[in-house]
Amino acid sequence: KLAVGGRDRHAVVYDVDGGAVREALDTEHEAFVYAVALSHDDEILAVGRVDCVVAIHDLTKNGVEVAVIAMEGLINGLAFAPRARSLAVAADQNTVDVWDLTDPTEPVETLVETRHAPTADVAFSRRG
Image (cartoon, rainbow, N blue to C red; front, side, top):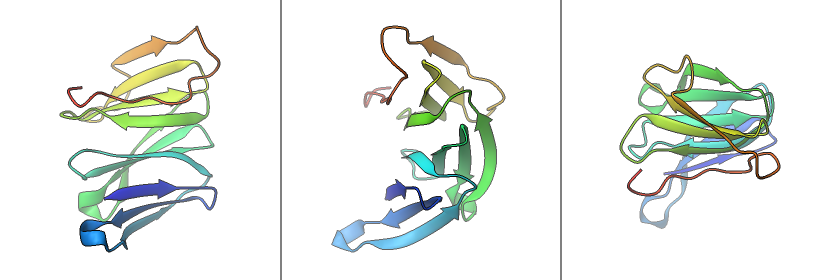
């Protein structure tokens, strides 16, 4: 699967099996989409929006929004841990927050990045 987001306020998930690309899910948002990430099991879509919100969608339930994470800066990058329900969020507030999506009420870890301008992106290794 492939997730794409943009200024049209949509995040779209495509099936790309066998060279054929077909739309599997289209979610509409209240603001421009700046970042998207799919969980490694293809069950969760995270959508980072220009209004400093990360919307969490359950793809096993037709993409229904199941959680919203509010940040203090623009969402620049999202990444799922390989073997967990953890989501890393890079934002203009010079932090990378790691959220446990089984209880997304507050980050389980925050890395304050002071060496650079606002954090532009984030990635996990294959081992997490």
